[in-house]
Length: 65
Image 1 (cartoon, rainbow, N blue to C red):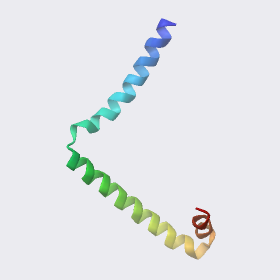
Image 2: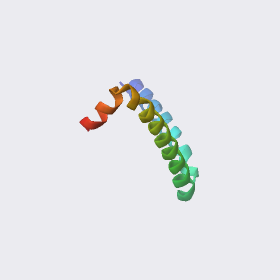
Image 3: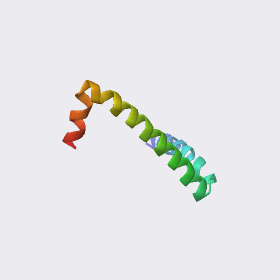
């Protein structure tokens, strides 16, 4: 049991370390990065919507929301 607990802690510790890399950023840097990512995501979604409107399948799923 103790060995399993140690393994679980080491696994969760590795995940925590991956998330802590962002902690080196200032809040301003984080906002800029997130804003850029959101803009890119919105651009991709708009491009898909433009292509989906001609197909008709993607447009129908948006109305269900």
